[in-house]
Image (cartoon, rainbow, N blue to C red; front, side, top):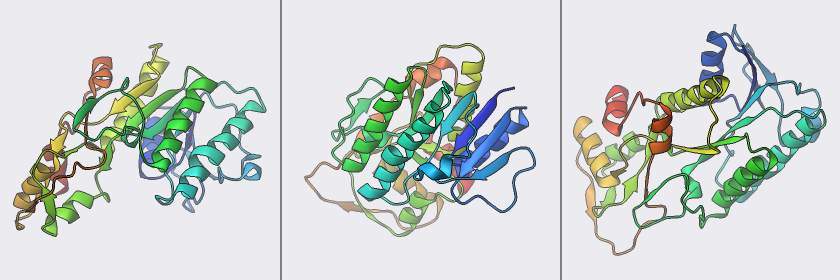
Length: 278
C-alpha cells in the first residue's frame, strides 16, 4: 500500500483516486472546490495551488504524487497560474520538508508544434507555436530537472462521458477539409488506466522512462471521423472545405513506448469508444 496524493481531482483524478483506493492504497485528492462529501475510501481536501498560503496545511509525507490539473480557460494567464505559479508553490511546499516523492505529471500532446501530418513520439521536438503550450513544455522540463524520477504523460484529445465535442460537431454538418488533417484521441477511461498502470509498474520496481505519449492506436483524419460519426448518428455528412492552407497542430501520435511497457488500451480506436457513447 502506498500513500498517494492526486492534485486535481476532477473527472479523471476522481476516477483514478477511486481506482487506487479500491486496490488498497491510501489516497488523498486535492481540489480547489471539492464536493461536500468525500468518497468512502479516500478523502478530498480543499486547497488552491496558486496560493502559497493555501498549501501550508498540506501534508508532505506522500510516497507518490499525481498532477492532473487543467487551466480554467485557454488564455495565457490561466496557464501561467497552473503551470508556473501552481507548480512552483507545490515544489516549494514539498521542498520545505525534503520530500522526494516522484510525480506523474499529466501533460498534453499540444506540446508538439508539428503541422504537416508527421508522426511524433516521446523523442520528437516540442516546439509549439502557442504560448500556452510553451508553458506546459516549461513545466515538463522543470519537473524532470527537479527529479529525474518524475514522469510526464502526454495525453492527446480526451473524450468520453461528458466530453462529446466531436459528437456535437458531427450533428452540425461542419465544413471540413478532406486532405489528411489528423486527429488524435484517448478515451477518459484509458487516461485513468494509463496512470494506474504506470504507478503499478513503478511499484513493481520497473524503471520508467521520463515521458510517455498516451493516445489510442488510430490517429485518423478528421474528415473520416466526422463522416463516420454522422453516419452513426443518422445526420447529414460534413461539407468538403476547399483550402490550400495546412492546419495548425496536424500530427499523428505514436504510442509504441507505452504499449511496449505492456499497456493494453480498452478503447484502441475512435469507433470502439464512440460506439459506446452513441
